[in-house]
Image (cartoon, rainbow, N blue to C red; front, side, top):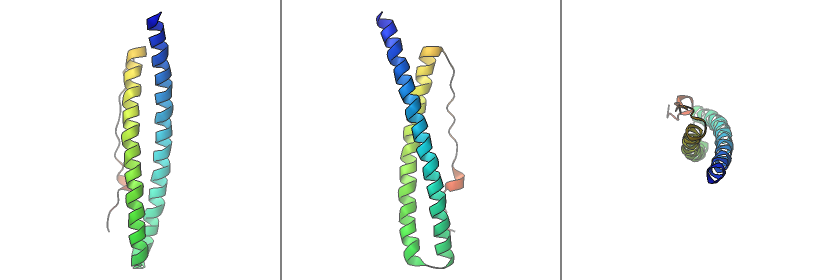
Length: 109
């Protein structure tokens, strides 16, 4: 009986971890879109040599990138937990792939 309770507890933890992982991924997508929008505004301000807007937009870019990076770390931790629980419960082999995000890297062109 205790092993059945542990199995149910692990299944609940798996379900919760998968949900939190999906939520974190949704936030990353939203932050990537926001980052792209702010980068467009920054490039436009740079083209017109509008320094006051550039400074504020650089600050926004730094904050958005920082938040996105924290979500990446959180999502990676949740993915690792999901993979571990899937291995324990279902003997599945789950590979965690970490992709690069070069499309949204900030460059100071």
